Length: 305
Image 1 (cartoon, one colour):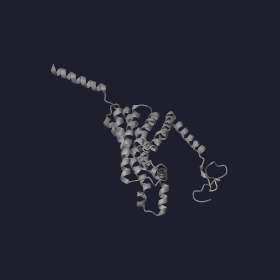
Image 2 (cartoon, rainbow, N blue to C red):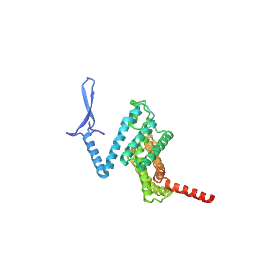
Image 3 (cartoon, one colour):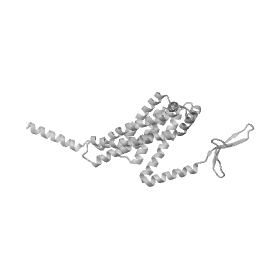
Image 4 (tube, rainbow, N blue to C red):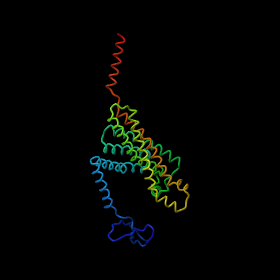
């Protein structure tokens, strides 16, 4: 029957059907969804080819890391949450494993990558603390989202609040990884360009890069969430609700909290990762230290003579 949401099916299209029975036991088939196997495979193949052509072997390793991340989510994170484990611990452990695979596969095992990894892990811990505090402070429930309502109905042992928290933590990994690897690379490049530069000057120069990165990434982060909430905002505007009610409602409040938590963790990750990278890029000079010690001993002997 034609109506809102009714698919416009045409001859030759591949669809999925759901099977049921009526009161007499006769089988009834109804439209469930489109069959998207081939189109999705084509889109994914184009994505993979472009990444590999532009980034070459590093792009291929990044795609392998993406596969590792999806594997960790499917094999570890989801089953652990279904078993009723602590969502924050599951997200932190799963996120750490994902970061190890993604960073070292894409950028190689070196000090630069290790500094980015350490900065990202610490920033992820900060994001976890901020997420838990923000969820408790704002009392968002997540029940405004249909999928969370279904989870509560069919998986009553799974905490919706914990699910929100895990989503906040894992969702912050991508943007944190982007910023931390950039800061680590900037610090190491600055240190190699000027061997005589001090840690303080390297840190200050890298932070200038980091501030520009923060400004652009925060826009990306907030606008990405706002774009996902456009249909919801449109429905609220048609319903004639005030802007205050719309913003403070559970559905929009979740996006605001997610954006603010991600942006705060992002901003804090810049000086943290920069400091770690500077220390690793400019370690103490052992030769200079030994020379200074020898000079002090020689001066002491001359004074005694």
